[in-house]
Image: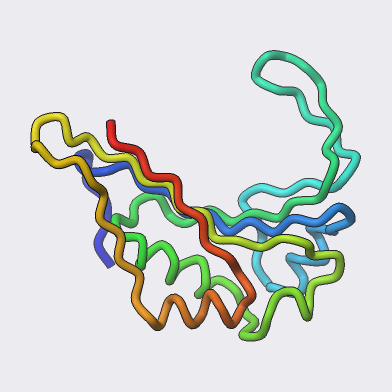
Length: 142
């Protein structure tokens, strides 16, 4: 796996599991991994603006190592951390939405390029489908 230096695109990958009554502690027991971020419905949170909000659903989230520099490596890490091989919807109670979210931002101001290349192999796509995950992308050219 390649690791990130100080130059190159900003890249992040995140596994998100949502459900109105999702219990993050139960998810951790099933997947045998601790989340990097989680909360239950009803938990209170203070926003950056100082407002207190009440969470309307549960979340269990896992962030890929930001030192990795390719999307396939990040997907491999996220999927590799999960100890199950079947659809998450079959084994996690109250799971309503599950996705791998990819963010990529690149500075093409000096290169003359105006597109972002993404490549995900069939092995990763098959694993994502087997787990019942969707995949979303947020791509930015800056």
